[in-house]
Image 1: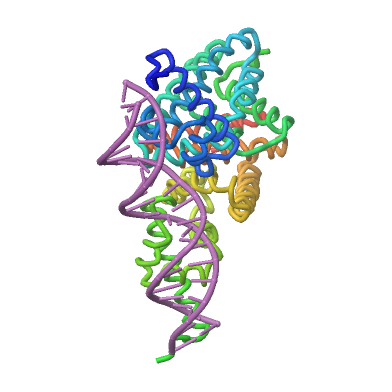
Image 2: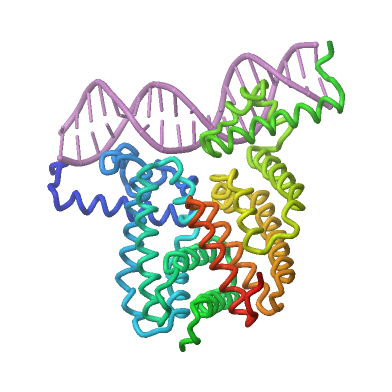
Amino acid sequence: MPRNRGPQNREEKREEIIAAAQRLLIDDGFESASTARIAKSAGVTVNTIYWYFQDKDELLIAVLDRILAEALATYAEIDGLPLNDRLLWVVDQLEQLHGLVNTVHARAATSPAIDAWHTGFHQLADALFADNLRTAGVAATDFAAMSAIGTFVIEGLLTHKRDDADKRAVIDLLVRSLIAASGQPGVS
Amino acid sequence: MPRNRGPQNREEKREEIIAAAQRLLIDDGFESASTARIAKSAGVTVNTIYWYFQDKDELLIAVLDRILAEALATYAEIDGLPLNDRLLWVVDQLEQLHGLVNTVHARAATSPAIDAWHTGFHQLADALFADNLRTAGVAATDFAAMSAIGTFVIEGLLTHKRDDADKRAVIDLLVRSLIAASGQPGVS
DNA sequence: ACCTGAACACCGTTCAAGT
DNA sequence: ACCTGAACACCGTTCAAGT
């Protein structure tokens, strides 16, 4: 039985490591989820991780990309809903990330790779938010500032635990005030 | 020359350690600023830090309290200014914290002490924000949700570097939209 | 009471060596 | 090409011992 099982199994093993990392990073946080424990959970030695990933940050990025892709794949679900319901859906969808949002922010200062991922994520988020505003009938003034506010509020909801009623109140007010500021009447 | 120099010098040395920690934590970040380097910078051995502080998180809290007290002491400066100018002042004031905001969020998950400090900080921030809204003539509906949005946006501005023009645009829109949502005409 | 030197368990990462 | 055992430098924290 050769140890090198070809390119097919390579992708498989890589995925196994990512899956183990995802579970531990989300459950225990970036610090507590040591590479040693991730390796053990994936059934490999620590150094094997470094064969597949440049460092722990690259592994984190693989996990983030996975979660993001999954979220985007189900994005079609909310096609017809009004803006506030869509935003609430996004918050609920991303809430599983929990501490990972903070981890990304914290490590962006140290790791250029994480910093780049973070920038890309915000570009995507801003674009999606602007698109949603357009759909909701908001005039195209201040789209940049509006997207910034929208993203900041969503990030705030992700990083500061609140119950469902509070989340809804914050998002409703957010949408209501952005629409009010744009001089539009409310859109149902 | 006795090594024990009495309670007066105790406070002095404590302050020296906090000062060294503040500089290193802000300049290098929580991770990079090891207790060893903080100790060396303060002219003591590592274990001395543990004589004055329970752990590294307690040292961080001492630093945070110091910065917060300093900021509150100069808070009177902006007494007459309109809300948006006040908020911009707060952002500029707290911007020296940089990565510390993320550090607090990240460590709140692990350290109960940091978590408690974080909760207290948000209570203070919410109270101040509500007070400012009242002064600006905003009706008292949704003060909780408004404060949440205000705090999240300010935190967003603190953790995502933007130039002065962007910061101003975001804050102006924030104030404008909150006032608009409260059904009030604009207040200069 | 205050401070130190030396240790402890752990961390992310690397490297020579194996198949 | 893929994976390992063993090491490296570093981390936060502790402890017995000194004054």
